[in-house]
Length: 283
Image 1 (cartoon, helix red, strand yellow):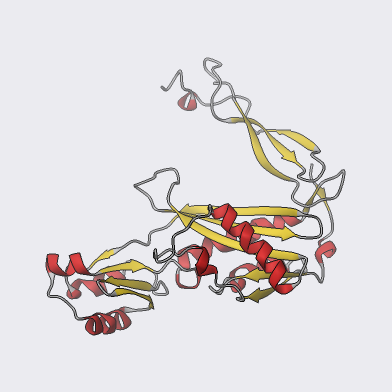
Image 2 (tube, one colour):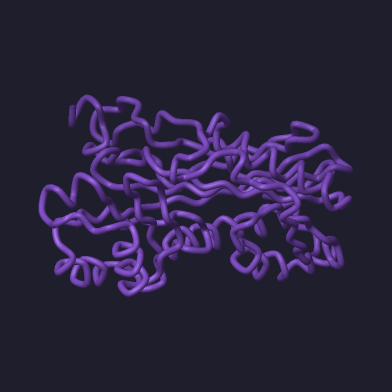
């Protein structure tokens, strides 16, 4: 069982968050339950690390990027605790069929030299809108959250942060709307603005990642008291209940301390796997 230290162990401490995308309001409520307060800094332009809209190529992995932001947050604020956030789209259980968002939060504890990674992921419905005709625009926008902003990609560049049909039509008029049908669709696309402050579906997963981070910060190693004594590893090979063949389902879970490497093995809830999960019974 994980060692639990009172919430007051974090009481009064301050975390620096590096962001230009208004993420503090999504993250702060979960951390405030531990007595942690969040301070935003935008002293570094995080778009230099890559943009969803493609103007700046992403060269770091999402984890590397979130880690870099967390460490920069410490440097820029002078605080011992820094937080970085990064989202990515793609992958998931049905790549190519379901758009998948993964959100990472990395808390860097400079005094301990420890990072704590929390994550949340799930499907998102936002997608590019084909502008075959302006008449269809209202109908197509109605499928999405009204707080979702859009970016207009046209031959002259990209216009971001467009909220609502009126703002989109205004920009279409300014860029010179070309006819309709194939001509329009080839020259102009309307894409979701995936920046956190403009994408409600991302905000859901950022909040979930923040809640997981708060739980990780309350799970302490019973040997050395370092935080993040968490179930992050599974032992697979649960035997099929029909033929005994090992499956991909877990037999047990491992809690391991990053600081002292103390670990506890916790058995899973199931004794055997359903034959439907067996590579022999259900190849």
